[in-house]
Length: 106
Image 1 (tube, one colour):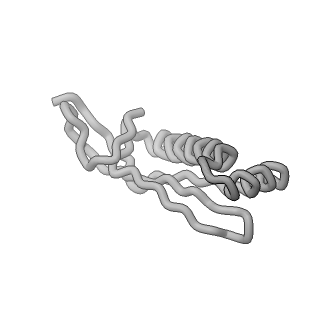
Image 2 (spheres, rainbow, N blue to C red; image 1 turned 45 degrees about the vertical axis):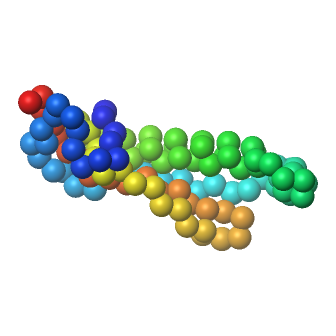
């Protein structure tokens, strides 16, 4: 599956638009990691616990988007974007979405 943030793929022609593919996950903060990050924020530096959590959440959202596109019979997803929103205190949704398409070589 080709995933692109652009609306075209070099060397490929989009032959059919299948619809929007999307995948999401909701991640909540972990109390122990939250305490460590709170202490780290006092002295400065990257909050590695949160960086890792968000990286994993993005991967889950992408994988779910790809699964959605595969159900539609897509070869690729173009115009991929991410969106986040807070769903409750300490929990956020990560949404990956794009346009599922059929492609062929030029």
